[in-house]
Image 1 (tube, rainbow, N blue to C red):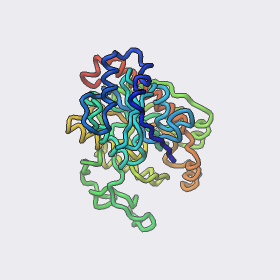
Image 2: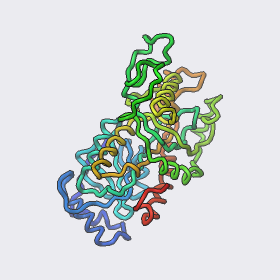
Image 3: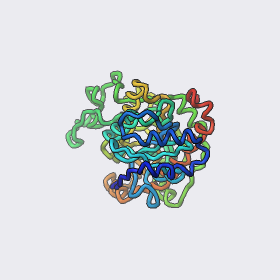
Length: 370
C-alpha cells in the first residue's frame, strides 16, 4: 500500500536545501548543517532545534505531487524540504529550519509507531526538550458523534488490543461482546479498570485550549461527503457538515467495522477510562506513539504534556441501518468516502494550533498553554 524510497541527502547539498529559509540566522543554519552531518543515532555535538513534531502514520505513493496520504499536505504546504536520513525508522524525516517543524511517518500499527517515536526521541541529532507533538491522522468516526471530515481532539487514547476474545459465533447469549479487557473477568465485570499501559490521558488543559482555538475553523464540505452522510438517516451528528469536536480515540490493530463492534468500542472506551472517555475515532497507532513519548518523558527526552492527538473521519465506523456491515466494509475498502476531506480537515485544524504555538514561541516555549 505504501511505497517509500530512501534518499540520503549529501552533506555538500545541505546549504542548497536550506537556502530558501531566509529568516533563519546564519548560526542556526550552521548548527543544523553540523547536526545533519552526524550519522543517524550516533553521538553528535550539535543538535537540530525542533519546536514542533508532526506525527503522521502513512503516505500513498510519493511524498509529494500525487494522491496525498497523511504526510503529503504537511510536507508541501509547510515547505518541509530538508530530508534527514532516518534508517532506524520507517521513513526519512523532513524538516524546515526556519519554522523548526520536523515531520515523521511512523508506519501503520502500534509496533511501528512506538519504535519510530522512540528512535526519534533517542536520536542525539535532535533537541526535542521543548518540542510540541501533533499526532495528525485519519480515522473511522462514530456516526453517533460526528460526520466524516470532522476533526476530533482526543482527551484519552485507549488500547483496544489488550483483551480476551471469543469468536462471536461462540459467545454466550447474555454477553454483549466476545471481546473484553484483559483485566475483566467477563463483559459484565464492573470492577475498576487497570489503566497502566492501556489508557493514555492527554494534557487536558492543552486539549481544551486547542479545541477553543479551533472549534470555529471552517472545514470545507463537498458533494462526495454530502452524499455519504445523507445515507445515515437517524444519526443527526453524522449528517452535519464537518466540524471540530472533542472525542476520544480507540487504538486497535484490527480494522473493525459494524454496529455491534461500534457498541463494543464505546463500552470498551467508557470502561477503560472509568466512564470519563467517549469513543469517537478508531485508529491503530496512538497508544504506541504515546507509550514511547511517556518513556521519553521519564528520560528527559520529550515532554508528554506537549502532545496533542487530532484524528479526522475518513469513513464511518459502522454502516447505515439498511446496509449489512460486510457490504459496507467491502465498499469502504475500495476507497474511503471521506479520504481527501479528512486530510484537508487535519491540515486546516492542526495548522491553527501550529501557527499559534510557533507564532508566539516566546510565550509557549516556557510552558504549554492552558
